Length: 309
Image (tube, rainbow, N blue to C red; front, top):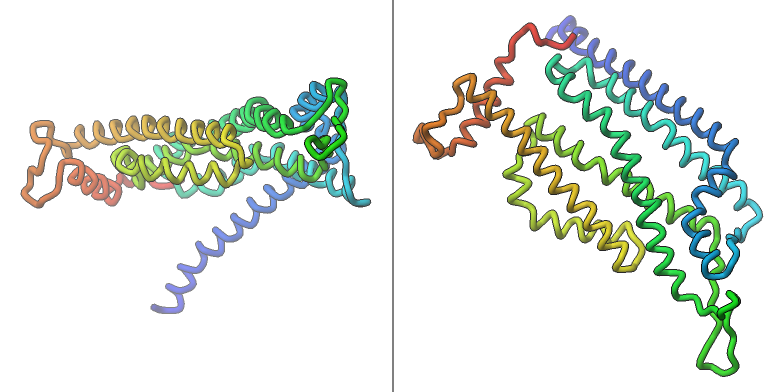
């Protein structure tokens, strides 16, 4: 390879790296601005995040209070809250910067196909986070706080003798925020599953047949994931499993729709034969295999007018 060819091949790479740097800087700046805004409202955000556990504590004891065990914990808690709020506020900007980096490398038809999923991603994240905050967390706290041993007046019940010992909850803000943020982020990201699966299907990397055939393995993986990211109680684990598996089934439906559109397009272009559902060319491949080969051929021979703009 000549020196001129090396320089020509290196130039696009440098341009892409410069573009990536610009997008990363803008995403980081958006995150920093979101952090500053959230830091100014850290107390209000904390009061909001403490809502689920305060509702349970007030019902059980008549008051709500969390403690911190280190002198610096109050400040570090405000920083954690600001980072959490900064990520939530900057999430649409980060997604947009990712799209602006990827979009120049897509064909015009691919841009129109991918853009709706980019818009749906923040919406699904918000739905997942809200489901965790308003449904899963109250159930989890109700389960765990049920192990307090309280008197009818709300005080810890202390009875002489070893048979009964008063048990009351003294939660730290670090422990509570860690659990709450993990739940909110985990469910928010989990709700991205249909978007991810559909995008992979549009890219030709996934099919409804493969998702259906691996359903039993997916169930085991979802059970393990639910056990890892939820507290050790059966209720929240079952809720997490039900939600993720439901999203998996929704993803299969969406991928089937993508497969049908691809099949219809291949049929219009003559790559699909409706008269024969089996191996029609004697090469041992089924009709689905022949369609995938035709799709690869179609991608290689794509019309020049649809080159990236």
